Length: 293
Image (tube, rainbow, N blue to C red; front, side):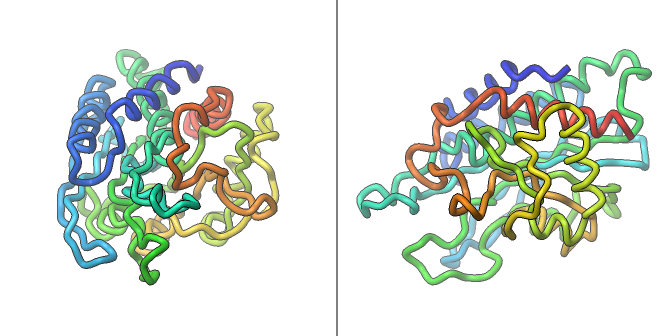
């Protein structure tokens, strides 16, 4: 049973490090924490480090972190979230606030917190193989997702999701395949609305239906709204395009309310925005999906 209080604590722990901006001490410390946590839960941990090019031509040190359960199994599912923070609060109205890095409680830490609790739940079953999922599970924490072009610069294509672009071209194991992937992004806010994101339906409609139907059966239909939402450039897009793994995005995005949650890319994306009930709805749905395989 997914424990929402545990997931909430994992979100809080990440935020306590400070903004996890690539190159910052908080980023390095949080990365070490994620590696140690996955290892403590019994996952086989792999790290990918490389330099990737940002929108302004500068080179960023990237660190993707992967935790694998039942690595011996050929049938696998990919669960992912990004763990870095936006370097700027560029959706703030006042220019003097736009250069402040984002705490990233919802935009980043919420998905990672849920997946850490999923990892803990799986890890608790390792001594008894009969209680493990019948499919191998790879949890991937993508880096440098949120370093895309800020509002004051001319938008450049493919400057977002640099860690997933790298992983999709250079998977952590040569020839890696998963039957499908599920990306979490902005999955902890109060009154979250998870609609069927456009690219998810385009590349992996059956996976979207599997997840949304499972959520409805569990009583989480108020969060998982079974109607088409907008198109979002996110890590799943590059997983689909570059690796060919059908991957969906569970993301709080609603065209009718104007897009992302109100505090997106502002100084106010902090723990005040996180609702343990939303974490529970997403996390319990994920566990139910992977244990149904």
